[in-house]
Length: 326
Image 1: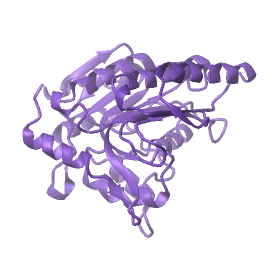
Image 2 (image 1 turned 180 degrees about the vertical axis):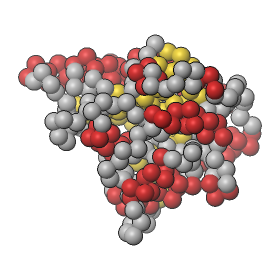
Image 3 (image 1 turned 120 degrees about the vertical axis):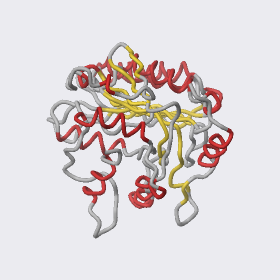
């Protein structure tokens, strides 16, 4: 795998060190390396425990950067990997002893005190559907700084993605550079301020995963469409079966495919790229992955998920973003 040059490492460090600030100098968001996995079985006891195990797995390599955790709105407490797992399992068992279909789980860990946007962290939120007919779709995410694994050309991030996908069996997911908003929630205005950034840097995941899950679960009876591609794109076997035979074989040599039991992870080039549409640069390897997978992309938005001021249209802006690699 190609090593990052000194220049590319310096540029990555610069993005890492530059959070996006709001009008009152508060941090709206920062760039991170994100693993985001979308999965089903969130309404089952086993599915929830598997998601907890997956989040714990993604924490293992970075535990020296994790300071605190929160278990189902129980307040912050010092990070303890064993207690994170055991406490979550106890919560799940207690909930399912009362209801056979239980979706109410909220877990998180991060590297700094509440109110800050720490790059090192993870979260899992399983919530009841808006309406009873909604599909069972949930997600978990874990992030690190951009440079944490940069010197090794992000080899460990590939290993982490394969391990997490092998355990969770997601319907789809992504790994690469992305936006992380405040873990306590970001305002609509702060997200709106970041829309130009989302459009400019095509390789940057927008981080609006909750809004996507709501739309996808409402619009399709089965979660069988992906949100977006990135440097690493996980596609489960059920979705892969919808592609024409031999479709993955058309990928260029620069886009290797990593197999795991349950699906594949497609790697778009030797290392993650952010791109810059202001300079006419959209990563070609990302385009190549999108070209193969595009029939599986979710586009059935009833409302847009990008917050934009009037007279701009949120739905149009959303479709423009999801089609940015076309």
